[in-house]
Length: 249
View 1: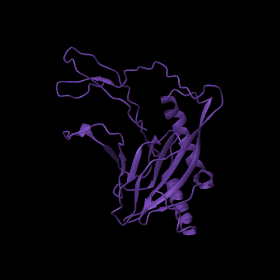
View 2: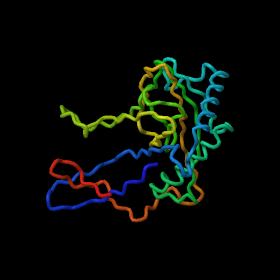
View 3: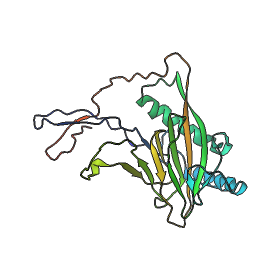
View 4: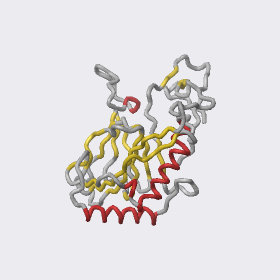
């Protein structure tokens, strides 16, 4: 995982204008092939997972239809209980315990994440996933088991209307963001983030594991996070003369 960015406000006398980001989605990006981490995995293990998914698809060629469209295959829930995925489920927990829960100030001794359900996906040529949410959970995620990056981007979609009239187009006025699928990469995102998967225009199959996260609280008020040295202005930035936020690392 990339080192966390420590953002702080740098006040200068060069500008009177400041920018505040309101209601950002907190999306965690993880590379499961990063070495020497609690969530580190190997190529061999991911190849084993691919073989397991192939066996699941052979046993149940129809799968189920939820967001997957055209020829896209999706397994039923149960990867979280399948022995072959046990290691992966532990790695997911390691990411939550090491990064996600501390970010929200939750005490991992009193608040534990649980993989509520998990399923496998295979998108072959032409397959895609319709825009959807993951209802009934806190966080969701996708881990790419086999993907070269050109088999269909994950499109995130801002479903909140921010303007009500004509507006100038700009990189900073995006209504969505695209993530490239690559073997070993994973995204952890709030379940209310609307997203879809572009059609696979290659002759390669795109393999992924999706999951939903529930929370278990072992003490009173354990669902209230306490963040040490929390700065309510962590997303408030001065702007330089070119209109770019000034970020201190």
